[in-house]
Length: 423
Image (tube, rainbow, N blue to C red; front, side, top):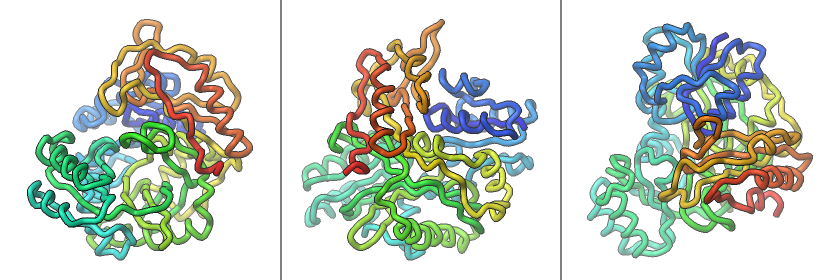
């Protein structure tokens, strides 16, 4: 089987790495890929959101199955376009992808479907939003409506910060058109967890639990990022919590879409807050999480490609559950100095081979490219270093030993990934 993975980040490297291990995969391509993905797949120089060129490539190269990594091509309707030509593709249709592409759509569907979530208001006028902030209790959460690469959420601790945030999003357009509307919602207190499932709308097969670290600095300080690290499993997600999330959040949102005539096929990611009143939905993503994927897939024993094919072809009922390595996995994201703000590119990365040769370590590339015989930085999040251990402490220790072998100018990473699980 000839497989195409679309995307260029750490999540796509983890997907290509796992898919290349499948007995069904004869040849794996990735568009556009990166310097690390090139070790597991043939990289094709086509942007992830250039649907016309991707379609032409799939037809001309007789690709049997396409897997969409990032959210942007899903929002642009790549699945709908491929479906027109009877091409096999993994991911939800454009209308279902609105769950991530529009936070306002997602919140309204949650309310309509009885999904527990924070109370919220939606504004498309900056002055009205700022006026609303006058008499609210703080902290509050302010979200840009559209796609903002995981950075469109701000926890405002006071009125002044809230007003500045609304001004930045809606007037200064720091997230472009994604900030034409904002959602202002109550700030939920508790611990976050990431619950990912495969679904073909009839069957739901959960992946292992995980927990992400969004803030850029240790002890959850600093601005939100796309994610600075993750670990799996998340001890706080007990069997009872998992069951409640599946019943009250995942199933209800899939049924809510179905009532609107929308069939969801793909992976669905629920970001949840485990509050004193039970799990509440924070957001939905319509693709694999990044970096959660880099902590989950090293633990997966079931053939990933087989499961994805079953999902895309509405045959997920042949699975009751997935087979997992009992060990823990930790992923530490290595970033460019200055991320998530301005950062420099083109810094030579040293120590990749040494780290990659360590037992039970996988180094997933995100923002990298090859220049002559060197691998250099080309993005904010540069690498995801993932390590397996018999328990969470051992996994943390092994992963950081691997991280310490890597070096480039301005390199930054959190030193406390997994601390919640240890606590």
